[in-house]
Image (cartoon, rainbow, N blue to C red; front, side, top):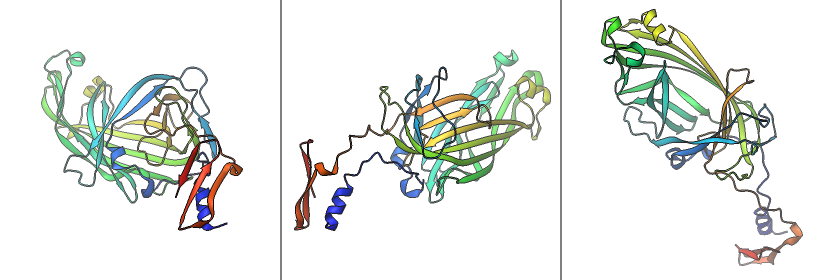
Length: 335
């Protein structure tokens, strides 16, 4: 058979064949993908859930998941000069005791992986009157850029089965607090954080989910990445450890440790996991939430075509061109 015919037939191999993938800089998400808002769905955790255990060469069918509600994640161009290597950002709400504030994480894609450089915080004032009884009390986060030291790897390239990496990142968040009961008037404070994140590729396979209309997608290659996150937080006021009584009033402790664990099913060409499953701890036994990404999903595969239904002509090829015709489809393709 002529080489040209071999090339032509290769175009007709079934597109649904799946194999273990390797995430690297050549199939990393584009800037357009990273800078565009995403949609997803949080699913109900009632009823029988699909098997989410560690598997290799797995077929994960998550079309039985039932949507609870939809949500948006906000991405944009990284627009602060404090992080010159960052190219896109992701806005999140960060808990602080019983309160929360908004921060924008800064990311970039390099030869070594998808990196997180730090956070940008715009000024935000949170009233504390419901907690302290004084309507003039407040917690203020000033305009600030928070640098991660060192940079954190969201995904390390190359990333494939058994790849593992651990980052230990330190950063400091500044605030000012006014609480009349403790004679604090816009007192400068800091939360000093140490974030330890361990990622391990535990499995791989193909996965399908439902699209935004509730219809099954085609199967997509994914890596199953387990992530364990631990944050150690210490709190300071006027340069000294914060008073224990004040921390207790906020539901905080000095040197407190918060942990979380995830199984992420990650595609090539995407920043957000196709499915993100959060567990109560690193035993991966109890699911806290499950989110499904709804962007750029694979279509359902077409039916396989028998080789004896494929006509390629002329044979031999003349003038470097040929035509491929598939019987029963009323379609032909010339090359």
